[in-house]
Image (cartoon, rainbow, N blue to C red; front, side):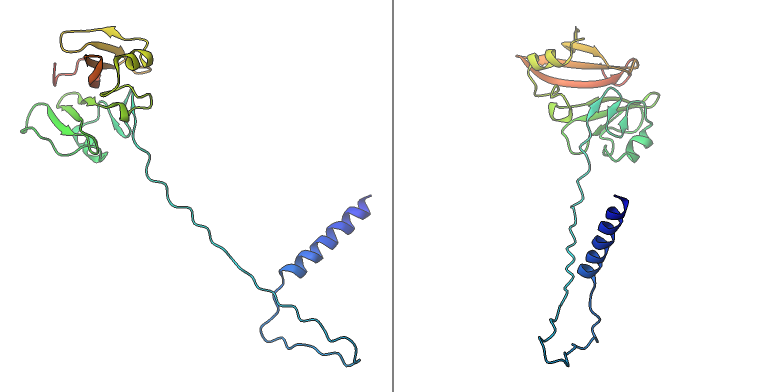
Length: 190
């Protein structure tokens, strides 16, 4: 049995070599001097197709219990700017500053003492679709730990896995009109 396997492998190798060999460009065709059947000329052409896969665009950041993509709660103002997800401050120097969250119509608040303290978000910026623009029913379905709050927010929810953060939501007429992830004790807004 081993002999047949070796023979099969040897025949396959010879067949592969014959199929993939390329005649040299200066090889002259041979002729038969016996007057029999003329030799068969074999031409081999190697075609290489290069398939390039387009580079995927960078993944869209998503709100989590720790921030928005590379923008994390607690980062210093400079670290937040270096993350390239916020624009320059829209507030005068000193105290907390508000920054546009690039590519969105939301804002980020940065405290001089706590760093990034609050990030606003829409439903499109989440993996679960619960943010500004979502229905109150969707919010309640996605956040089973919602607690009624007041006076400025309708609900709060503890951030999963991050005891330093809280989600805050304002609901008006059955729709989420404000959604934030904030450090507990943030000092930039009420």
